[in-house]
Length: 374
Image 1 (cartoon, rainbow, N blue to C red):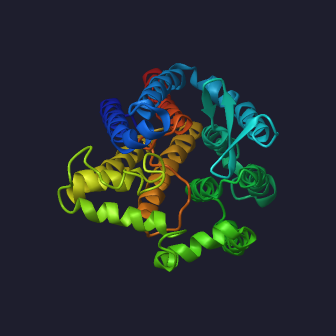
Image 2 (tube, one colour; image 1 turned 90 degrees about the horizontal axis):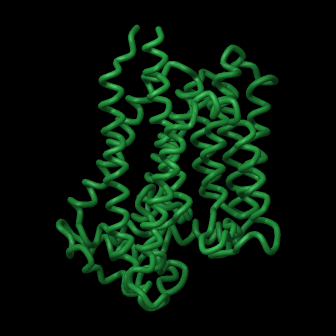
Image 3 (cartoon, rainbow, N blue to C red; image 1 turned 180 degrees about the vertical axis):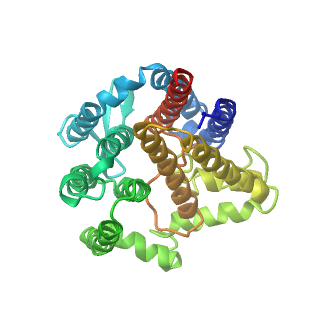
């Protein structure tokens, strides 16, 4: 069957347009949500906007690198790139190299910018999944030669993430991996057993750290400590409620006046909801639905396993992250520490997201070239 090149090109352009709109929305609301905080703490209301603008430029460079680098090179060196990302994760745990923020060692300081290796790990772990699943496709149902080795790979990755700690990334990557193995037609008994065994493991991880248990309890009843641990989610709900149907207007949020913590990062959505209201928030959510829809349409046109599984992983991962962030902001999930893709302030996450989209452009070009040769 011939590749529908025109549809692939049109869907790819649409996906790029969606990501571009989300990024521009992010710049607007990073400034709106952070201006008061930035003026008070940094002496300039545009401090975070300027940094996010710089990160956007770097993200576009990353996009073009991943879009133009030879497709076979990415496939060939996927294992090495994954190992390098694990090495960067280890560096965050070394005193003097890792930077501790908000109680977690997730950053490396590189001059005037900070790098979050866990975001790079997401890229290269999923690329390695694509490489691995294509290579093992003929033995995908084998536990010894396929499923067990990759469980070990995930185990090492998750151990480093939990050491930081970054429980939210473990949840998103684990969910993405299960989706990929399900689509690859792995033995369903292995997947079900893994999911069932993950439940007591998650319970153990929650009870092993008091702050995780506290998040669960606060999620169940934030009003038990309205001035303490429940303060953030209560202020988040107040911000969303203040927006009503049409919002109070861009830059007119009241909750950004030091009521809502992390208002330009993990909890940027409540500020957006307050300023553009229910209908504006619904439009934003529909952008993520469109991102998933067109992303999946593109993925289904890829013929080689590496392109298919890696691109599917990126779409699933970003969608899960968006869903979790929105649910946390609305009080439907405990706090996870995950930003809203392409919108929340955060350089490495924005760069990683655009690199993922660049890879998909690369795969689309490779698919067209392969179709032309055939």
